Structure formats: C-alpha cells, structure tokens
Length: 50
Image (cartoon, rainbow, N blue to C red; front, side, top):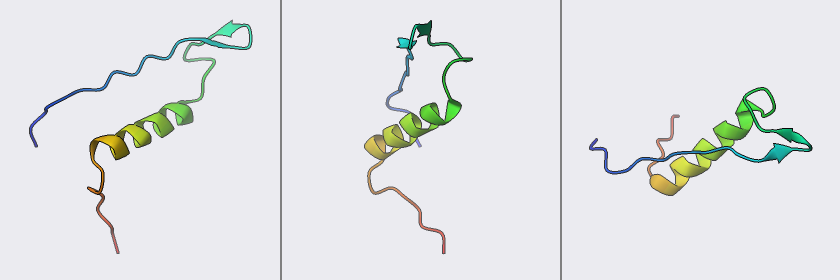
C-alpha cells in the first residue's frame, strides 16, 4: 500500500495541576485515539475473521 499521508498526535495539557507526560496519562487513551484515526482513514476497510 502506498503511503499518502501521515498522522501526528500531540498530547498537551494538564491532568488537574500536573502537566501531561508519559507518567500522567494512560496508554489506553492513545490506543483509543489511534483506533478512531484508523476508522477515519480506512472506513469500511475492516477484515472480519470468522
């Protein structure tokens, strides 16, 4: 498959009074963002395993 675009995810902000860093956010949140991006980039391109 030819690469035609890229996605960059920048996490910034605070969790309460603590700045976001790898120690203060959950990797599962990033996984959810990536799943949503995949759905936007490849709609209907899901392979169903039976």
